Length: 362
Image: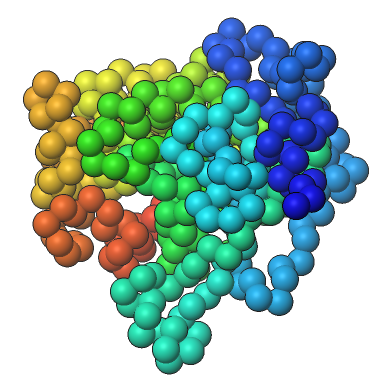
């Protein structure tokens, strides 16, 4: 069978310039575009992103007739068989950061679809599409120029497909009118692999930082609203701390809207320390937690008995200067870890946080 350009890009046969290696660069060193390629600094990366906007390098393509919505996905997962079909990307870590466009189908339009969606979920992922051979982060910046963003970072035990669907379900559930972007980091999607997921989340900080910085520095961009769940909240907070230490500014803070940490799986002492290191971004944070969250109770036990932010009481968190919403009385089931996705009242909290962030910067 003849490989398509998309398959070649993921199999390593395409031009090396189509791949961005996520480097470990806490000191702002260069990042590479494939083996043996020229080195490009952070500043030049941002210039490339601006160039993508000005040149119309990534004009938003029209949805195909069978697609009803799309989500741009940044991922550092390893592709499966060229990412041509499900599951597209695995739990394994990749040598590069990729950006794809996920096309979704609304299954709830017909009576049969509505009945099925009550069990399987309303939306389904049809396919993913590559965005061409250019630098993926710069291409993303061009594709979303001029739009407010809902940027979703998933939590522990989450597949690539689930991360995309959760991002869109949330955006759809709150009637978000901008563009949805998901960051899908390498999670093993298994209960027994908590340790692997935590290490993968921390390994993903540099890749996420590059995206936050490029989007936050783009003069043609809208508001960057960050919604992070569970272990993804830890990844997000650590990335913001790293970003602010390297290149924090009032311009960057003004570009970032709401930062919602839903059921954050973060050591409460680490949380308090990190808030002191992210400057004015701390005031953008809304924490959605529940004292009935059993998943975080187990996580706290694994961490030596230190309580998690998402399972802490309001009185413990509010003195730190963040907004706190107690969702203990909402949702259903015995776990109580994802009520921000399943409960309309808790989703409304996310909507209000985004609206509040927009008003604060008008």
